[in-house]
Amino acid sequence: MCKTKLQNFFELLSFPTKFAVPTQELTQRFRQLQARVHPDKYSNKTSREQTNSADWSSLINKAYKTLSAPVERGQYILQLEGEAMPQDNSALNTTFLMAMMERNEEVEEAADSATLEQLNTQIVKELEYNAKKLTTQFDSNDLLAIKQTLVEMKYLLSIQSSIKKKQQQLLSSS
Image (cartoon, rainbow, N blue to C red; front, top):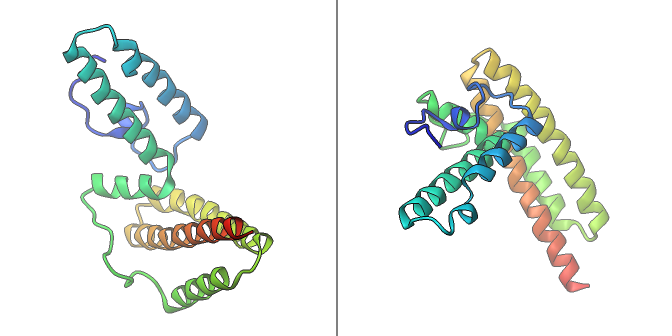
């Protein structure tokens, strides 16, 4: 790799610093870069070249992981802009928080995989909707709305994680 001073993950993967990132193109560029720097290609090289390769590979992996997940990508853009995420629930309204509590109860009370899958499908749809909403919010630079949407998505991801844990519990007990 000839670049030595990178500004950010977007530059590393040759994208403009925008929320909307084409997923297939991101994966393609990630694979192309990894093919060039993967440590296996440097196994017969000097230890310095091997270390350099491992460092680049790790950086590329981190960039891909960050840019491929909407919440992480959104938070990363805010970080680049010098904006911090709220550390409390002040960005959320009471109605949303109550709905999340109810969802958590539904997950706890779910007695079968079909119910959990139905809940997960709803969460996936909401996450997709919020990712589209973030694109518009970032385009209009609505920082307050961006932060609120990101916090909401983090709650949804947490519930999704609870669903997966509950599914594992149901599988292991059957």
